[in-house]
Length: 412
Ligand SMILES: Nc1nc2c(ncn2[C@@H]2O[C@H](COP(=O)(O)OP(=O)(O)OP(=O)(O)O)[C@@H](O)[C@H]2O)c(=O)[nH]1
Ligand SMILES: [Mg+2]
Image (cartoon, rainbow, N blue to C red; front, top):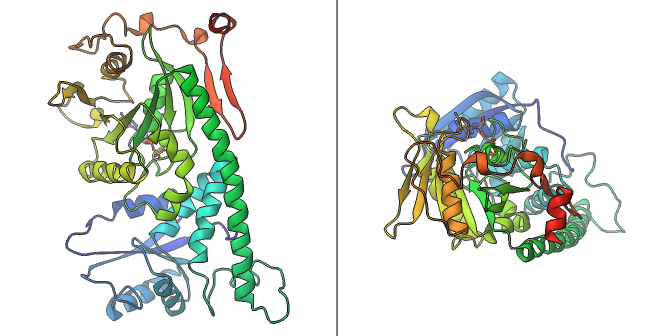
């Protein structure tokens, strides 16, 4: 990584809102916390149009400058996109590092990336973001012990060297990623041949996708009350009923104004959602912001080419709501399109199992009135854990399927 980690640093946060803007800065605070940065002050205000040079007007800029000095903060973090020149002007005026929203999200992604592919994707996004910010007299690289390092030929300025090396690195990363994407494609094709329906969990970050994944697969995927807990996709075989198993995919969560660099870099991972047979769009029903979050997710799905994939909306966390019990809702054609449940307590999971059964194995939906599923979907009829293919995991090169000997023989 080119930059030093920001964990442990302190920041003054800036959130300005215009009339039609989200007037809520709680998400910014969650993002900052997820990056391991401590927020020491918050500057808010209303502004119709951003100032071209500093984003802020003169009065707000002075307020920010004073807060940064008073709190001895390391960074100023804006909950907005900043142009490279605004970022540069602000860094000069404040004599501190300045992050915009994209940069902050990139930072969190960099901290979470575990797999080879995830690390490549984040690094590519970071370098692309950085390359738009390489200008004469001010570069991120310059502030790091004289840039990327190597000396250029005669007459080549440090800026030209940085640009050239950055371009080289971007091309190299892109090549490595293309290779990994090919392997991921092969994995998908193998699954297609195996004819297991693929069900992908999508949704806003922190909606409860990994918790639902664990509840359905009895897996132990990292779920936590922080944004972007999951970055790398995990695939597991999941027995929905005694007759049906699907491949369930847990993947990265979305967020409003997801940086373009990230969507582009994560295209191959996100492809898992585009090629699913069904999306379970997990929504945090306990969060007042959920209608807006749902729209943001739908927008990103359309952008990555997954707008056409059938969806069931999962209104999760009903245990946080008073007087709301698990239920299903149908659309005008009589198809199940919403399920209210709690991944944490398990209430309503039976509805989901039955709905998947109805969707993929043609069994009639049994309309469980309580939390008792129909006979076919009853957990008692689902093969016990030791008889399940315990894991369908995929790393950079291999698709690993663990299964029992008897099941293997039955496939042969
Ligand atoms: N009360 C309640 N909390 C839940 C429920 N489902 C998930 N949570 C909590 O919500 C938080 C986020 O859960 P995750 O499963 O990590 O969410 P995610 O959608 O995978 O999040 P990212 O990986 O960050 O995109 C955790 O603290 C969970 O314990 C639920 O049904 N009820
Ligand atoms: Mg997760």
